[in-house]
Length: 113
Image 1 (cartoon, rainbow, N blue to C red):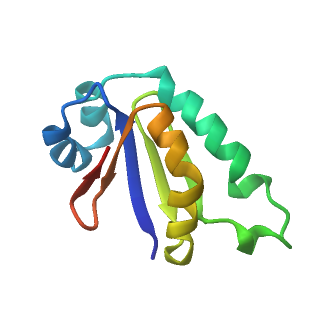
Image 2 (cartoon, helix red, strand yellow):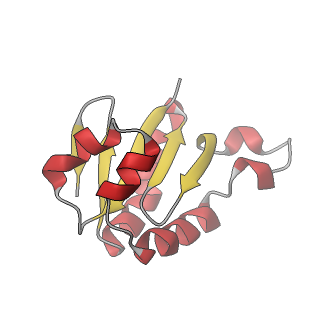
């Protein structure tokens, strides 16, 4: 199990985000605004926490990822190991704020941003 965090552009209507999250991917793409800030933010995030595919076996347990981030121009989906959620929020929160991203926690139906 992991903690899911879905990041989208602040150009989207926050009230619609939970229902869009539930849609099939091809429908969600049509509802969300494409924003290059997502790509820029993900590049900064991956400098701090590289994707699992880039890590050596001896340091992979130090990664916060339960699986590597899913990155598109419409959203970033993070699957974070529960034990590393606080660490990611502390270190990556400034990146999310810098790029004015909205975070959605589908486990607790909570919107950040």
